[in-house]
Image: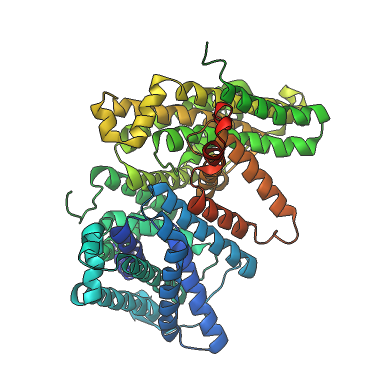
Length: 286
Length: 322
């Protein structure tokens, strides 16, 4: 029992950091503009394919490919905001939910037409190391470190730069921010871009660990929802901790319960947290 | 008496009947299959409209009631050998009951929080049923072929399902109209416009919302039993597809949320469009892309949907289109 629990907890911790990075993008967008991005999973899938394509066509190291994916993700997010979200930013929730879902449909549809739903795999491995009877692939450690690095950079950006301050100001009160001369539309577009970038990077990191297909993003998007609620909607750094909690829960769950029951546990927990503490375990009470 | 004479109601019912009576008149099996799907989505969209259009609550888990109702009905038929009528009523009742219990909890949430919770419920229901052995777990259940003999064979059963589905679609329209023109419906609209103000004005919001949720759940439960009875087997992946929930939302938006004709029209247009795209060699592979672009254009440029747009542009239509 204990023998299987510790390795799965360690595994859960490493994966949880990557989940947390993905959720951070969702949480940032929600926090700044009250939009739930239903194309989040699809953008993660784009990140997976981005790393795969750059690696397999140019032979570039996947971790360098991630830098490119980040830039593409940022640009994609900004364009997506301008085309599909800006018009409905002040409309009722349904409009922005449907607008982002439409983008999701377009991405998944185009992806299925081009790549079908075959499973792809980034054929790159970094060896592994063993502690006792327990083997950890280095790619997992690298992914977890990458997730922590990106979160750290996001923190510095949000709290130590002027543009970061703009973003926080717009999140806090858009009208007041505009009165202070902050170009709110551009800040919103940039925030959406960063959210998409984080999703893309997280997708890319997942591609270095697991095989994927065009529909894989959906499952991670659902995990992101759970995490975002755990960490408090609109609190990007809470999302990282939420990710770790979910990762550990999954780890412990797979060690104790039959694997198929783990999602039941996850979503029941999700609904309960929404009901009892909608501001999240770490969020402030409103 | 004025309520019964309403032109908008009769136009909607008449349109549904005109489409619904066409396959029996021609006797064409192909047409029947096309129309039965449209009728089912019309019933689903119309019942979702009670929450989405009237009350303003975004429900991503509408398909849960369809799936769970279907599972209960299927269980009644395959394990307990109950007739179809009992199964359909049982499925509807089970969905209503589940909605009442769920509603107690999640209707306290508003806006995006409610929407997120319904996504969670959809996934939780699928994950739970996949593990629930009496319902066959991940492989689901299937009906013994002999079951259809009680209804005059498989061919005859398809027609029975067809007529029942037509009846359900009409029932959904009449229910929507009855609610819309009642004091209860006014309460729902008040909640949509401003829930706090509605409460101050004397609408007892928790009960009102709970009833809207329960009423919107019963018809999907019944439709689910019919659909999977026709199908012959039921699996968790088919019964709880989040994507289908969202497609129903698209239908309501396309036709016009909060209107009587809108969801019916939306279901018809969306289903036909999907049918055409699927058979066209040019769009076959990218039908999802085309559907996505259409959805985006509607959301961005005509958020009131076809019916809402027509009512605003052509004033004389307001007497005819509800």
